[in-house]
Length: 184
Ligand code: NI
Image (cartoon, rainbow, N blue to C red):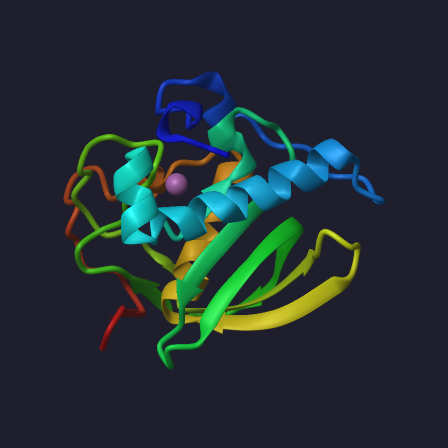
């Protein structure tokens, strides 16, 4: 299982490297990585497991963060209706997005960043995405709210981008044009 010590932190070059497309069918190693990424998130949101293994709670984890350059990440979170979204996305892409932006008023966090980085991180408010499941099935889904933001945060990891790259350097809390803050 993935532990905090397996998660690389900012400054590690793998976090700044573009991950490579995964080929199908998946190797056993790719399958294990996929299930380990999702398992970490599930464990980290379970108070007993989190306490026992010292896991910081997370809703998304990308392969880069465990020092693997495979284009895959896991998400495990509830949407605004309380519906559980829990999946591994392989070779994910954003196929279209809203003009409207969104951001989390309290800023974003990352399991690879051991500090608070204040500021708004502009994201597309709504996205349509495509990705493959571990079984090679193609999915096309629409996301908004926190799931849309989390998907964009994780996709950035696969491209070597960190959330704070998007924060306005002069004024981290500058108004984001065409945006609605998350939760409003
Ligand atoms: Ni992150």
